[in-house]
Image 1 (cartoon, helix red, strand yellow):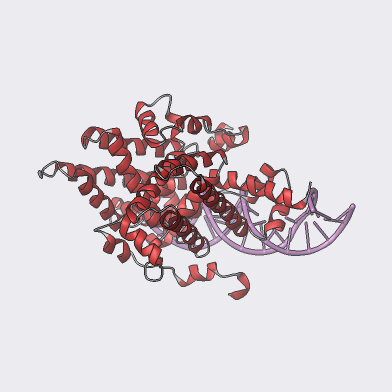
Image 2 (tube, chains in turn green, brown, orange, red; image 1 turned 90 degrees about the vertical axis):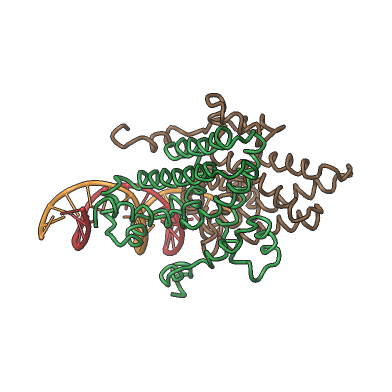
Length: 205
Length: 205
DNA sequence: GTCTATAGGATGATAGAC
DNA sequence: GTCTATCATCCTATAGAC
């Protein structure tokens, strides 16, 4: 495998791990295991864990912006751009961890390195909505608000309650109409036996 | 000082610290320093860091629910409940770290302990909106979406860019109309000299 | 009730072989 | 390019004094 392919492989793995555990909670060792390489090699490739996270964010943002531009380039009439962008947004859930890694960055604004980087990325999205999608400030606000709610129900793994809790079911249906199936197909939180053991009190292991 | 007062003091300090650093990034030592007690004492009082975080979340949720119920109990006409709840929500920013600690919990849905707890809390809020505020599913969705956007711009510390970035200014104005002053008064990210040193590369210290 | 001292475990990063 | 071995640091939690 070429170096660049392996680099991409690690970035994809890192996206999933950062999405599950957050920036601080994710370890370079877990990323390494998920990518099938050694932990020191992950550090060697990206310099530091922080740099790795920044690259994950850059990749996620690029994918997001490209997706939106793809929708806007669609020759279909301008009507319902809002709705089409929304559907495209939810489809990004296919790239596991992508939206979640972004969301984790969005609550780290006080971090001196990640904070400025995350703000800049968010404003890139805002600029696209205003300047390329033709939204006014209110429309952009509304669109972003819907996106943040989607991120939240996904971050909460609210789909885990879909079967058993009617309120969760109603909330999910209201939040991701049309793409509910996709959200549910992400499935219950999958944990390895190791992770389940870590969750139990020490005495019970 | 009575034991219960000191307990509340630690909970308030912990809310700020968890809000700034997230669950994993926050250390019991930082909480202790912020509260002016020793680190082992913090652990002693709450058992584990996880328990402390759960109590912070419970306190935050109770305050949120009580605030909303206060608005709903107001004898003024039923019109514009949405707006009045929104204003009350933003005013919760006065309790530093409260909304941020909740937001951090909302991206930890895959955690086996915090996840279920956070989901349940979120659904309590949803139930209040549906059953006590009289919102239908669409109205509840809209309200929650607006709240999540507020959480996000606050988590991003977007107000740090208010002076220098017109797009940030516009986004903030669209997101928290009426209460912009409050958001800005939270001020630029305040960091101690120690934290600034930690942010610099080691060689530069 | 509250502190000091410290054990015990995990983690990011480096050194160096192949 | 990639791995194994390992160091240094940090952090939660416990022990035990006052």
